[in-house]
Length: 200
Image (cartoon, rainbow, N blue to C red; front, side):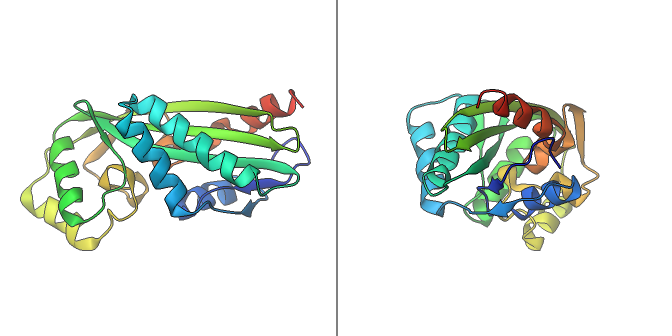
């Protein structure tokens, strides 16, 4: 729920972001950009040697802008999430081998999960971008633990090849919001919407 009577549009196909909004009581519609838009935004960031912070903020901006162009009135909400470990940016794995590489890299390591959020108001085209970071530690994974998650396909569509919401007992938050890891810092959203609406 928000303190403003606005039409909120979630620019994402993520069931986890949808669930976070529903659980927090937000009323919203869904209009997800084509996968090609997200892939292009991420690849541009990687090719430009963007920092992980710049990458998620730019990807969220590109997705929000794409849906804003199709929206007459309302607030578009877009987000992008990556993990960052040992100077490597870890987005969604493309296949099982890619997921295994990510998990082996993070095994026994402390890493960050970053979520960039862009809120875009129509018809004024005022927008604001926000960044949240959460620090996690992953226990050293045994081969059986590694194979269990890979065999389960639980890594599919998840930045860093894991979902914190899956209740993994080998993953521990050191600082930051759990919702940032899931894909949307829901505790911040009302304030961010308030801030945006103060500009229009």
